[in-house]
Every structure is written in structure tokens, then in C-alpha cells.
Length: 196
Image (cartoon, rainbow, N blue to C red; front, top):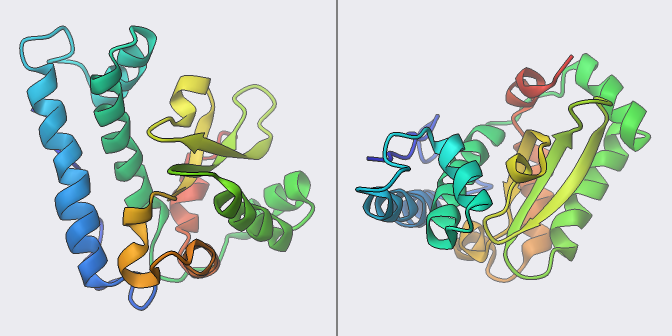
């Protein structure tokens, strides 16, 4: 059985950026819904004893679309909850990498926001790292896709599906992105994901 990882904080921890009501729907209904559906889909299949990451990779390779979509959404949400946190400063070693690859920290923030604004429909925006060059870049993915299927290392993600922000921001995706990216990126988690 696939279980969604528990939230790494209380549901009120990110107020005012995200409300308890948003977590009630986003985590309790959407995220747990994907996990429960995936558990049903993989019962009595080759995926039953796979890790979640292996389910994502193998189901994508095998074109098992329903399994892939649910597995990737569970994986993406697990990563998203860790990518956001209470306000914290970006560590100096990570600022150096952002300066190197995006010209400046502020340029990265603006480009990350714009990646979310310009993503048509539902999906995710990612800060990723190339495994060979170690260069950081921004990636947009549609629907349930993520960097694993592109052999990139995920550093941070922001959910750009409407259910991530509609309760608090209605259709104002820009305001959601501006608030969460400027105030609630988990830079400690990001720093731990960097390949040296």
C-alpha cells in the first residue's frame, strides 16, 4: 500500500500564504486521494513491492498511464510539502549557485514566478540541477510529469494546479506564486538536494 508522507508541519504553519482550508482540501483530499487510488491500481501488479520512485520511473517507461499519473502526483506532492516552509533565508552557498546560474537571487525569484505564470494549464515548476554539469535551471512540467523522467535532480518545486491555490487566491495564480516563492521556499531542503 502506498502512503502519502505526512505533512512536515501543522496545517496552520504557512498562514497567511496558505490557509488551513487549503491544506484540508489539497493534502487530505487531493494528495491522499492520489495515494489511495495508486494503492488500488498497483495491487496484484509488478509494481506492488516497488518504491514510489521506481513506480514513477517504470510506469512512465512502460506507458502505464493511470499508474504513472497517480504515482507521480504522490511523489510530486511529497516533494512539494518539503519545498515550502515558514520564512527562511537562502543560505549563502546556495545564493552563490543562483548568482552563477541565474545572474542573481532576485533574477531567479522573478524567473521562477514567471515560469509558473506562463505554464498553461496544470502542472509544476521546478528548480533542478543537471547531474553532469551541476548547473541549476528552471523546468516546467505538465500534469504529473517531474524531473525524474528527464534524469534531472529536483531541488525545489511549486504546485501550479488550481487546487493548490484556488481557495486562498481564486484564479490569481500570480499572487499565489509571488507569495509562496518570495516568502515560503524551504531553502534548507533545497540545499540538502544540491549535488556537490
